[in-house]
Image (cartoon, rainbow, N blue to C red; front, side):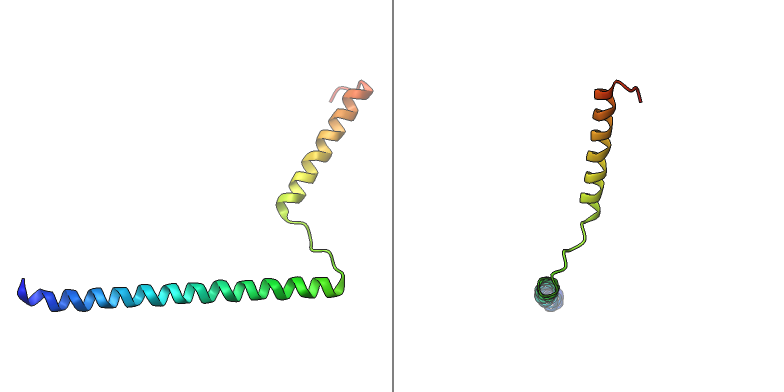
Length: 80
């Protein structure tokens, strides 16, 4: 057991170092992504472009259109 203590200490130190390096890398990655997101927003604002709707919002709009179509058919007395 005495001879395993230095090995365990080195392993623990290495693990802690890996955790710290991973955390720093993750924070850097998130910062870079935020920077790119802001750059894209700035370019869109300067050019006056409206960002494309997301897939989820497209599906939601299509669903609402379908519901309106069905309600209009019911109001007109047409069976689907």
